[in-house]
Length: 380
Image 1: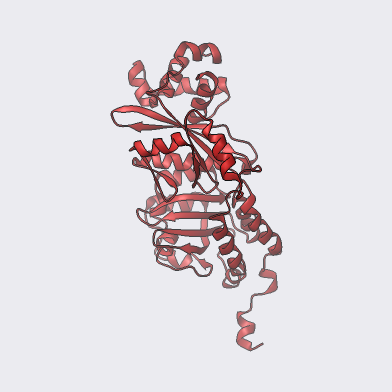
Image 2: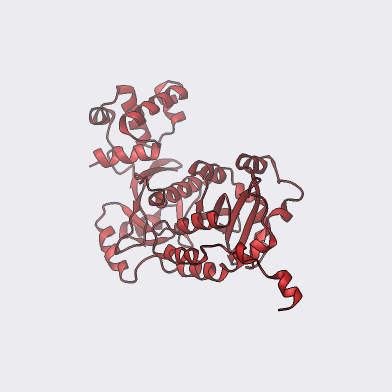
């Protein structure tokens, strides 16, 4: 070996000690309901990181279409999406100009400081210093980006550490490529189709990447006639940005439920339609089984075509006060807390107080979960 080779060689101690386990976990992601979450958690710990993400990013307009993550809270991910932080992210804005390559440090991209107050808040809140980032794949329309962050206390990535992480790249690329088509067993489509055809509502099965796998006949008819949502590149695309963000957050949260080990109740998303009654989309986690490697079942109710439970039914079933039951009745018809406050001639703060009491009495913690529980209990 030449002296130059000796200088560029990576010290053995910088290789992840569990490199074999990392690779095994990576390939197990193909059959894991949690997708790549387990691998990201192991990778983060192996390279002394504080957080890790594998993001599928639409180039224009810039947006995250799916994300697996470890070391970050759901609340932080919600904030990141709602504020469209991806459009301000220095690594992403540089990565979209690059072809797939090796792991790099983010420090050279941040020499002039964070680009804007929101980005600075993100960096300072998490005490982040550096990111090791990798363009896994790139097309004209999308980018697949892997990042592993470090805090100030953990220090920056050394060149030799990045070289050690490069050993994983062929396995990462192959696994992500396989995930494009390996989301379910080959013989499962007919069985799944038969099951969802039995549902009375428009129904869709999404895999753990948020991509549509199957739709029943009512679902296909729904997509043909509706204008508030469309199917683009096998993903739901809403024409309202707030609804798009809410759907992304909900399907990510529901699809990731078993990874946290605390389960996940179904959640219902209210989809507003100008001049028409809203749609109610209920998202339920699908467990790993003989038919599917995890995913999410989405069913759609048109509130104009169904008779929903009224306040009296809700009050009696859940033992609520009359005011609390009225709030629930309004929620399941698609009204926001602000709209309910105006309708009931009360303040929004009062409505929030009622909602808090309803959460305590029903054992729920989100409006979407509450709506799902009411509909599943009382809708006939």
